[in-house]
Length: 554
Ligand SMILES: Cc1cc2nc3c(=O)[nH]c(=O)nc-3n(C[C@H](O)[C@H](O)[C@H](O)COP(=O)(O)O)c2cc1C
Ligand code: SF4
Image (tube, rainbow, N blue to C red; front, side, top):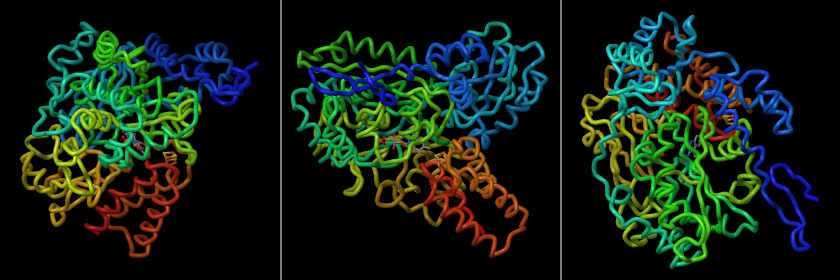
């Protein structure tokens, strides 16, 4: 008889004790998402029923249901309007948009209309910074809003809830680009990977020097080699499409325009590590992309690029799409795995690392959307070609999302080694005071630093670049970032949970001029503790913007 062991099971197979996956619990989040979509909330009796079906205590269901912003245990309106309070949206006038909704609906943010038709909420960045101010309404993204468009939107929702004509986002205009945006024949990367075989693919990815494009910059070749070396009957490839860093929207464009190359990259990873299952973890805000992504997966299955005996090479691999539910921290790879397993998205202690103990306790490679596409090109076109781009310490290109005070916000593919000042020229920014590189968790560079380079040798970034002109109060910008972290912290560990509110309080004091040298030095020491002692990257990076701005301005 099978003995359960957390998420996996040990069973006796051919006289040997082996692990098999028990993914029952991992269905919990999709079940709760379905109830939320059908009923608009998850009631006590729903939680009891679900708990019974999963054989868990109702408290466990409650703890999951209350973790995610897009699940609610309280009644909400039929239409839920979430206005992004990301810094790019605030700079573009989201305050006016909130006022327009409040006027039109006759409620305040956080309230529901008396006819239970509308709930108005604020939300963290929704990945629409190039079309700010933006809202997420009934599962759809709506950008470039004006107070006038708000009136039309509410009218349309009242008249025909399923149709929001004329207000959908246009795809970001992309400019330049020579790796990610270059053309290759469909499935040529996967075909070559299958011809090369596992060890050559691993070697090519290692020697390309590519580092993960999700922000942390971990060498992809090292990650894949570790997962390949792990002993297990089952392994997983997970593509991290949870893009939630304020100021980042490049993955939105890649998902809508280059889905096939993403899935192909996942299949190449599967060849390399020996996995037969892949999961794309898509942020809940990108719900409306699911239909097209599923169509692309079906097309790949029909073309024998997914499924059984792919391209006649005896390789089996398929991909499933799973949705997040409005939690930025789930972009952190271990929190993402927790979420996939049907738990609160709370980051794990490391080690063990996902390459050994990942989804369902099995070796798992987690890679960013852009990393998957880059690998497809590397295998299709070769390592030497890839190394002609970028610098000796940062090979290749980077897709950046640029928003804020510039004439041409959008998604750009640039060579590593580009300076901030060249990026500002590209996006036609004028009168620039500062540039936030890496989103809320990144650093703020002022005009004496615009010659610095994007690259691992100088300023690494997951891709968010937010431009601020001289009219912006940088202390307010930092306040916005800190409030974002406070909202999104999972609260597991003390330096992050308790440190962020202290920074917010002190920032207010600094703004009022109430600060002493002694207090400032205490703040720097608190920030250092948060950077060193927080459990995950969220807490560790939360003081970054604060420090770079306060150090410059105070
Ligand atoms: C709070 C937090 C949020 C993150 N969000 C994302 C994300 O949305 N997408 C992503 O690819 N990586 C994100 N990461 C980094 C992942 O933990 C992980 O390093 C990455 O997915 C690995 O892929 P890569 O090696 O291809 O970059 C986040 C990290 C932290 C700490
Ligand atoms: S650092 Fe913050 S988000 Fe990360 S585990 Fe600790 S409390 Fe949670």
